[in-house]
Image (tube, rainbow, N blue to C red):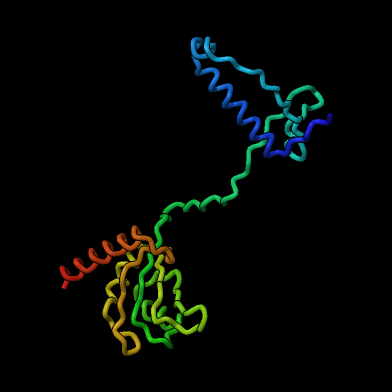
Length: 199
């Protein structure tokens, strides 16, 4: 009678059972291993089908012509490595939130308003994904913390006849976790205290 060929899943399950069975046998003491009152039956052993090796693994497992065995290759990391900052550069991003903007505000106008501060890296005016209408707020990123601090002084200044709000943001956007909200709340409370002390 022909033996049934096992699938990979069945082979793994069988190997797992054998492995656990060996561990269980090692942990059993001599007295437990041969109880006098139990009678055991011999269970026929199921032979494991040989695994076929293909592709890269086959090439890795084969011996070289001179008889030495080639070391297996390391798996490549799928995530790209984070770009390391150059000398003088930091990991932090210096971003402020600018709110209460008019819907007709452009990036150029906002850049011009904060031009006195200098060090503007980028300006992002947000708009609705569906309607493409502006939302009335923006994020401005600066090169250094010094520039960011100067920009915070623009809080409650007038821009196009509207009093704008300039506040700190946690950066990164999109993450509405409690930890991020708490971090942002603490930053803005500290900023409010500093503003009250200065005025």
